[in-house]
Image (cartoon, rainbow, N blue to C red; front, side, top):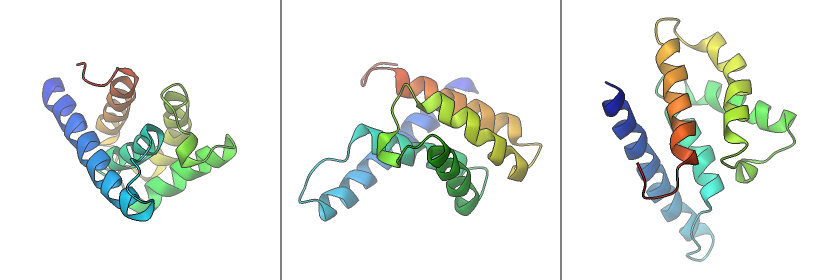
Length: 120
């Protein structure tokens, strides 16, 4: 089960990175989207499996604002703290039966983000 979830996280990250790069390149003259913006979008994608996009964005964006960060400021060293703080809001809207899975998926996403590209 853990291996399946890790594969899903990797697939989500790759999909987010690819789609984000296409959108960004269209907006910014073919420049590649930064890894930090990919972290933000990936975080949203993982949480949206369990909650509405509006709830996820509200909780994550409020957390970023409280830390005086923008989505593009999110980095592998700040991601775990942002996730932990955002969980305060996310858990209020998550189905209690799915809360454990949400927390596990977000923890795995943080672990995956800390690994160098191409490993794991």
